[in-house]
Amino acid sequence: MSRFRSIAIAVGLILVETACNAAPSISPASSSGAAASVPAATSSGPAPSAAGPAVSPGDKFKGINVNILTFNGPQVAEPLQRRAPDWEKLTGGHVNVVAVGFQTIYDKALLDASTGTNAFDAYVFNPQWLGDFTGPGYLLDLTDRVNNDPQLNWQDIGPFFRDFNASYNGKVYTIPLDGDFHMVYYRKDILEKDGVKPPATWDDYLTIAQKYNGQDLNGDGQPDYGSCIAKKKGAQSYWWIISVAGGLLQAKGTNEGAFFNTTDMSPLFGQNEAMTKALETYAKTVQFGPPDELNMDVGGSRGLFTTGRCALTMDWGDVGTLAPGTFAEDKTGATITPGWKQVLDRATGKLVACDATTCPNAVDGVNYAPFASFGGWSGAINAKSPKTNQDAAYDFLSYMSSPAISGVDVTLGKTGYNPYRTSQFTNIQPWLDAGLSQAAAENYLGAIKASLTNANMVLDLRIPLTKRYEQDVLDTALAQYLAKELDASATESAIADGWNATTDEAGKDKQLAAYVASLGVQR
Image (cartoon, rainbow, N blue to C red):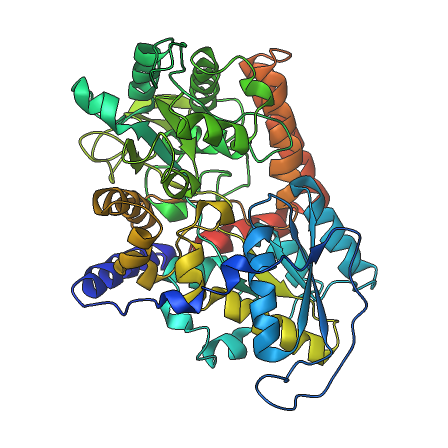
């Protein structure tokens, strides 16, 4: 049994066990001052660092300026900015949040560390990139700290996020602030009225999208859309095709992998019937979406869904927490991403029907492969920062991730943070305080748990040069395909050629070893 199959089972057992016990409630007082705080961020650059001795609990980081690089969503940076003044009152330290565009974070962080500039004490970024930052020693090993930090309560963090997302080669390098899985959201009110079940397969998704496309879904007299999926290049949209393709590419459990063949590192996102089917299906969703969907990011698709203009959408956990107070409140359902009744025969490149042998994890003949896309925004400490700054940066990230603080922030749609702690799944009160009904909260958390505990969960790519494989090669080829500059075959070739070139540049044996290790495969 692979260690990630073990993690999925462990998560399920933990969630079942803790659900049977009363979870401690989170006091509203823990965040009452934060909501009114003035953000402590700038975008002009990091403030100069200064060291100061710890004097008392309220002054232990007095005079120390912590510079953190992150995403200018405005999600992700928002809770860091909002909570920084409260942490400053507790410790005397100051946090300067430098927020940049998604396409910029990786290059800016890597340049900062690799050139020895070390302008940033911490990075709140994508844990997929750990392979490029831990090898050269750019990040501080946090293993001992997290295991001995009562504020953080490390064991409350879900096993997947603790043992996979935060760790690399057996050491902990990041503090999770977020948990990410793709899900499909649907207009529960109209599907129930019409006796339509939520989509179990991607064929179901297209059927439902076609049925409601052009109907007035929010009563404003205007035709609305069957599907809204953000497809803008350079704006995190490339992950959607992985969710569409996942169930066609991986069926025998998490450690089978969905990106490369684990024997020779040949790309599965290449010329085969599974990728052709996934690309064609993804392109069909455009027919049922808004006219500017190819230039729309997640802010646009979320806005359309919460105003009642979409029957279906695919997103991370944010939509569920954005719905309260909008047209979509108590009209939104969430479900595990649809699957397929076929799977790729890797030996022939052909699709074959799912059965007990080809799809051993199938449910009612459907092979689900929920995608742990991105994994969740996480905080890492610069290994070359002064020790006092490292200590302060760690303390701030620990504070942000602590149960009382994160337990509130994951319930607020504006943060971009989604649940990742066991207590966040078992203590429903903060979700009710955030405006979700009990039914909505249970449905939302249930969809995430169904993904998190699925034995065929797809792990995101997490090897050196991951940014090149996904954000550069995949995103570019996919955008060209949607723009009809490339057909499916040429798109598959472009992805495979780009991935093979990247693999050869980094070293095939090295990349294969890293990929196999990331899946927990025993060789």
